[in-house]
Amino acid sequence: MEEGNQTCVTEFVLLGFTDIPYLQVALFVFAFAFYLLNITANSTIMTVVIAEPRLHTPMYYLLANLSLLDFCISSAIVPKMLSGFMVEKKTISFEACIVQLHFSHFFGCTEAMLLTAMSIDRYVAICHPLRYLTIMTIMNVSACIWLTSCSWSVGFMYSLPHTILTARLPFCASNRVSHFFCDIKPLLKLACTDTYINEILVLLITGFVAIGTFGMILLSYVYIGSHMMKIKSSESRQKAFSTCVSHLTAVFFFLGAAACTYLGPTTNDSMYKDRMAAILFTVVTPTLNPIIYALRNEVAKQSMKKLIYGNVVWWPS
Image (cartoon, one colour):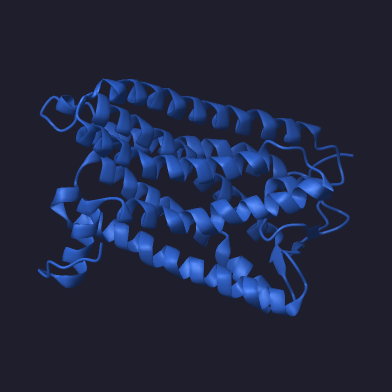
């Protein structure tokens, strides 16, 4: 079948999770609570990093970018998901669907790249501490801007071919998407043409990004682990380990869920698992990231206390 102007579908129906009313209410409360906490926590992190001079360092610059991405990726998906729980007509226009697909993949890939940049930052901070915050620093402002710019650029370039090729597919039969947002795999199942090239593209590009980011993160922590073995002071070793735990937790949840979603086969059974995994990296992980980083970082906690309470010195441990 020829591609081009054969797209008869003008809107899609997002089937979501369930049609059972009380489950929809429960899911709405769950998603709304997490989204509200997401907005509050990530906005607080960004505001504190900007307002507090002590946090004008590479680690917190990258953390502020992570908070921005967590805010963006949830905002691209969760509001539409919440409205779907409360209305009978769970539709989204074809154009809005493609836009949502683009930004969800754009922000998702950018976050994977940023998590890799953060692992490089941890490597430099732990393995080369004397060159971390000195005049001859490795992780200076220019390096941080370059890393984040590359992350955002790669995210955009990753999403662009998926967006263009999906938008050109003919959808002339069913318009019922087995998901709570417009993701590429459920959309490919609805196309009334051969989607082999699209599926191979998803596997190859996503696989390259996943293996590349995971490989860089793994290599960074191999060097970090090797360096930590040489640290004689248990206090210094514990401090170095503590700075890595938050990052490793974010990597585990985000990259693990994303890999399960996009690197597995597209079957009816896998679609339900994909929705469960998508909840992790679109609702849960973006909310937990700022909490994990803040609660494990005394400087961040003190800075938030200073911003919220002024000169009050008390902060719950």
